[in-house]
Length: 310
Image 1: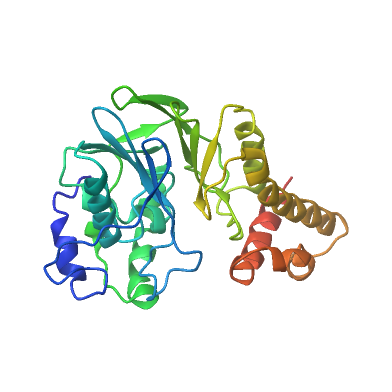
Image 2 (image 1 turned 90 degrees about the vertical axis):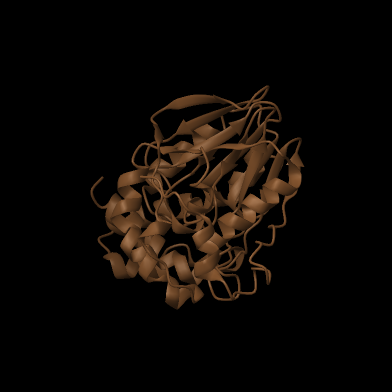
């Protein structure tokens, strides 16, 4: 599926503070975290009218021949602003958009790039997961960020990755890796060989509490596998600040997930039900995480539902 118009996004969203008077999108603020690797940090909050859905870390890698975009944000407008930021940094054309998973804050900006000769790349399972949830994602937009969305916001992938694949951006090679079910069932990481930069998508949350939409045991196993890459120098999480030590960056998230797993397993072994587990699991970690109260009970529920069948 390919949406062939991105400028319409600006018309739909005109009148908001992030679009200039002449409808030219205001470029997102990006930082060069490694040579040719640019990141825009999203707001560490829920999507709301104040941040207009700009809550995910997104960005791009510049090769000699083309640019790879990694995630596009939570609206076509954010995608258009990312596109404008790319144009500020380079005249090199965009050849691909890589979606790290199907959550709306990472992919609903895809439409801003769909008019180009751009290949949309995602993990196997991305299309079915996004299609199944698209109606829910779109109908929530007016309430959460005050913008009406429609089906043209949904851009599915042209290429699906099952395992590992390499992309040549021209003098620069990046490795894409899909993973077993972890944060979601369609997680994809992007590794820039030149700079040792790893884009984790939402396999890594920094400061903001992780959100389980897949498998807690699978997520911990994936974190173990990520740690095997000893050449990572810069880590771009799905949410939170960029880090430069993979083991230290993932340690708080690992402790949080291990605590939930172990406490839920004990509750099940002791004969306690879900409500007891929700009330007593991992609550001592509340002060360590942003948005803890918004996601923690849901995480415990997801873990309990998975672990009771071990």
